[in-house]
Image (cartoon, rainbow, N blue to C red):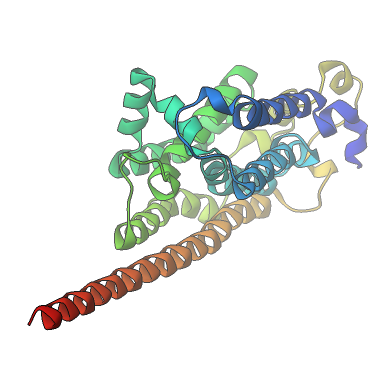
Length: 304
């Protein structure tokens, strides 16, 4: 059965699209037109603009395009959404927002204190792991998928925990704690290890554990989160099996695999970038020490 039966609003989320347009307009106002209102001499770079716009486009694909509707039908698509939202979009936003805007955020003592607490490496790892695991615990996921306020609150909190997770890796704000070299690599590896149990429980479960993806009644109630009530009441549908030939258990297991594979590939890429940057910095430091040593020797020989 075609997804088109759910209508344009369910497929393309026009209100969410307008919201993202407003966010983008605000970004350009803050970084261009109103730049003089912020401290510092730096300006937004083309790279930061490109990265921020990439994050906005990806966010719309994940939460505003038909992918979001499919995420309520197939658990595997839901996990792909989570992987992109938490592991790709979150760090892109950190990188895409220039430091003079982050400085403004940190100028508010209460906000700064909260961010500094939750971005401590141990705290951020624990908070993200707990939020991700809790969000995908069957009883919790089934409950929040039946309530729009709960679903929104959990998604925002989980995304916020992802921002905290990636902050020690990607922030370049002067004066704020940053991980370097081997500490960054260890942090990323530990993050991958901590997510493994939650993904393993999903992958190796021998029965479907989510009612909102297996029970027709629960699934219909969950669909009300993204399909207008008037449209949904006029349809004669019974469950997700009308839109896919994949058994529910296989879909569930595939979801866990997708999350783990995307995570591993992304983490290998990040570790590679960290190692290259760390090696390059070490080489530059060694070269600088060598240059200074040569200069000092010349000075000694001249005076001698």
